[in-house]
Length: 305
Image (cartoon, rainbow, N blue to C red; front, side):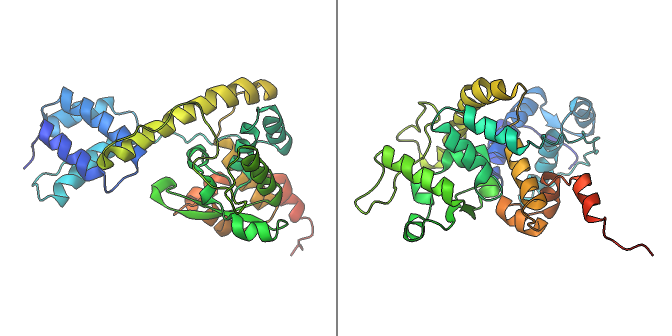
């Protein structure tokens, strides 16, 4: 079959099929594009594909078309159409921030968001903003740290990118300051251990009560998106960018941390990959920016042949 009818039923079936295969952010992006595609075109064939490809500007749009092929294959629908490749746009790598710039960001942020920025940069090889938003008191291993407060703490980052969990370390000073914050907020239980839900209040938006379980992932993503926007506008733009007098990409903190661990602390790329939670080491290599000057300094004592 070289023609596929783009019906509402097919669109709903593809969205339901995506739920078990993709992260919720990917599902939201592709669902929005599929809706526009199905509304504009009634069938997918070689002729409509030519018209569609003239308007395709991003790889995720092409990926939606490939996904339709995959859905048809897995569901025994006799349809396949060859999707032309498109020219990839050059990837923009976030700027690597200096130690002094990161310190100034922390100093300029109002409490407790100075702690949130410290978590973004100092936990493991750096966290995503969504991971800090979802970070709960119960995700941190307080019991072992309380017995020896000079040691690093650890936390489980729940449902990171790709719905994977990973363990990250937390420096002793940050652990102590988080503990003091928990005490200040009266979040200690009868055993003096911090407990409860999300650590940082990113605005007033709360998860709705009574959402059906099959819709909870979508609501959680909407909740995180609103918290992200609140943090970006009310903390990063209002305070940090004003202090540094330049635009900041929040993800720069994660790139800067990975680079710092490799260049200054000497961690191997493979070790940073584990801390970042990357399944592909090529992704980690994008995060770690090698300083040519430091590389040349290391070459000073190499022998000439």
